[in-house]
Image (cartoon, rainbow, N blue to C red; front, side):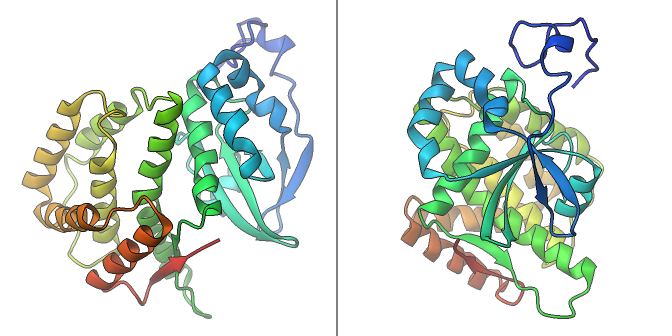
Length: 293
């Protein structure tokens, strides 16, 4: 987000000057991260009120689905959050399930609080992940035995996260599409960034963490529903680029896409079978596992 002057209109869309709106917004609570660091949490009303008042689609989604999610800790990204949770500023938002003294806690980290009106999809999307986990759709967790080195631990966590995201993102996107909450230009921007940033990248060696993660990202890019991707030429350019530059990733990605066509993933049972099939076929059982909340 560009720097805002005190007298500029507030980015949240309220119509007020920044100095009279979000400039002085403060946390209303706190949360202790796994490292023991304490971060501020924000009242949910401060996060969603402008989205609700400005977007009938978001209001419909929120009014219909919010009760099924349960308590959410809303956190604004800072250096502690980024280093401890691996959050990347610029990704705009990400959900986390963390173990606390009272059990599993739901967190959503955002680049900025309150979010801008352009972040409508991001906020609803991250909330959507909790809905599917609450409905017993499985995710993927890493195997982390005692004594594992930090580097290996981080690689396994990233691998598990990318395999979960590969399916859960399209599930959330399809749900939001029913409410008329659009992916907008985010997909096109992502594809263009890949085409630019990966131009000088060499294909990872087969059967490495980097290769597996790249395969899951390839599959995810191909799973977005055509009603969410408004410009199919982006996907065609992406696939041609991968076929010529990353043939092994493309081959493995197409194999998983075929499994998805055969198995489907629209029920917890189908997704459980699909994930297990992928873990077995890629021989990943020693590093990751099915995980249900």
